[in-house]
Length: 419
Image (cartoon, rainbow, N blue to C red; front, side, top):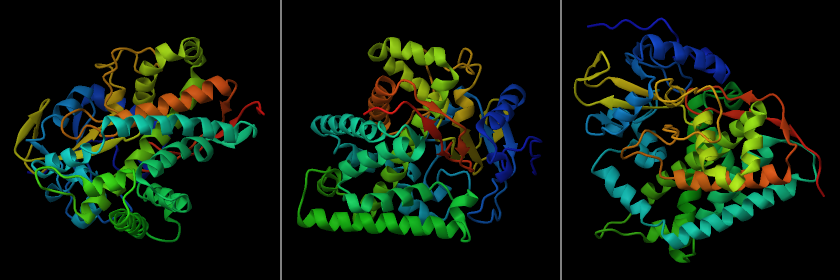
């Protein structure tokens, strides 16, 4: 039986090259008219769509949460095509997506191994590093008065944090950061240049794997107090991670750990300017409100816009019958602006509570492993920015084209220089 594609376009590169507000209007229309709808295959520069028949788009918060928490029916594993809207070769999924593209029991075993290295002592050490890094970033920009907020603020903190956690040498950090950025930018013409999208992706993947293998070899010879050493030494029930598994998690950590904080902090500084009453409210009681503010930052930014699942069996969502083997796309940003889940979702509110956003996923086994880390980074960074550079203003953002990361490439900012 052939399905009829929905008239609204959410598949083309042209659609995903639009600013977020224009895309949001289309998703709002889908939520009102047909919250579970069938669409053309995602257009991509990565690979031809081949036999891809299309995908189901889930645009309501409740449906996204329900599917996220039902991993027995909705698969993420490589054998089902992984979690990207586009089809990605299985060897790339294995090398790049780590536990994201795994199902039980392998997912549970690896997540348990990886989680075991985040001891209370290590988390406390990471938090101290983050606070020092946030201070250092503002120390550096304070005398300048005019900066690119993305390059000199929001992109710096996650790379710095991850590098300190993992043990990446300072001389390698820019190269690793550039590769992590390329891993999510292959649908943007600026990043592809005269090359091809798959070449950009594979070059970046090679850079990150080579770095990871070098770190693993070095830490086996000479252990340090860093995350790579802990991953090399981690063991549960006699099992350890292989070099390839550590390298794949290294890629995931560099990419996911970079983009969540980077994009959320950039979108949040824009929102605080657009809603000056909310900036004033946060400054009036920073310690009391930063917790709810960070959740609103993540909801508003929705840094990861979509992941997909694949139905293992025939299932019904809403009034639509999903066949086994069909793609089900979770549109997190749409879920975060769902009128049935949020009061006045178009309003940026640093005191919003409850805030059932799906910015870290919709729950279930794939809930973001680094959510606590991202919250620490955002709290520390905005504590420094808002108290030390209170008159900082930003200009027009340049958006990243693509259906995965809600990215901003550049954002000019000005403030009164501080000695």
